[in-house]
Length: 219
Image (cartoon, rainbow, N blue to C red; front, side, top):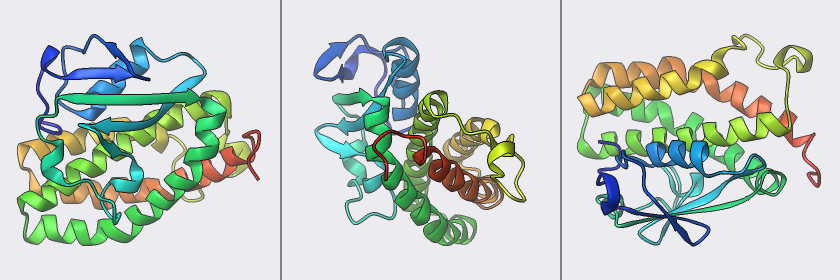
């Protein structure tokens, strides 16, 4: 289930070094992030980075990075730490990082699709799990950025050849990917990666580039 996390109070959760009561569901980073976003983050704040048992978890150490987190370190964590910052500060530090992450997704996902489709293994499904956890974190970041630095797809002429509502579908797609991965549905996982996740990447990239033009301090 998710990152193999424990439920309830067995996992200690900290925001900027202050411990908070955990949610009922601590089964994944995405469930913790959703709880924190809804119950604890100020309107102008966002999660800057995450540590699990003292190990940094950001797009830079998700699949495709030389700093990729050792998978077993994410199993049954005792401590999850979230560090926040002002949304403009987060935007300046995160946009380039996420653009690099999207490039890795485009490069690596086709091979991951092939492996899941033809020779699925625990390692490939672990990479799928890390992928959707990273994408979920990115989606929450997008929501924060869009609120403060709105980009109108039609006005900005973004997403050529893509449906503008695909951003609104991304969370539902990630949920289906999570459910398929947990249910061992190899075919559905590979289809979602190939037909829904990859088509999102160009629009995510264009939106980030457009948002960067509106962020104070961005060059």
